[in-house]
Image (cartoon, rainbow, N blue to C red; front, side):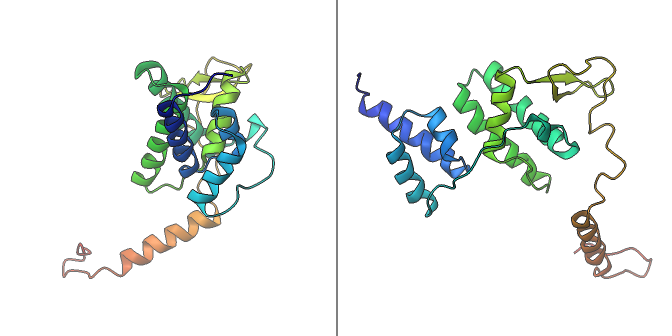
Length: 197
């Protein structure tokens, strides 16, 4: 058994910390890192303040085919691929940096993230196993997540052709009502235009 140097060991600990802070489950840590299970559990407790959650990981690629999940998965995976292929990041660096960029994009766009790190990691594994592929949209030219053996020609992505009920959930309706309420609270000038706050 070869012993790691102290710097290699420290790098593994920093990688584990980054993954745990982003919400990685124990199965992800065990797959990606060489630290002992006991050490990762101790790190998890120290960082999160609780024991790691138990339970199965997501196992179906169909989850990524729903409208909103597909848009978010496509955004994350295209970012991951860019970091891996163009920026020459390692798999783990591309995963963590890509997920951080995805979260930042959601925050900037005032959108709630649909993916968590475990879903993002599982998505990458589905691509590695040739279960999923990127398919070009015939309207916008962007590449979106699709099943490996789905049609490749004249396919439209969920962003260009959302389903008829998209954005009509109770949560979206409540957000619209809140936005309209905020708008009606603004003082109105004599010419009928709401003044900026």
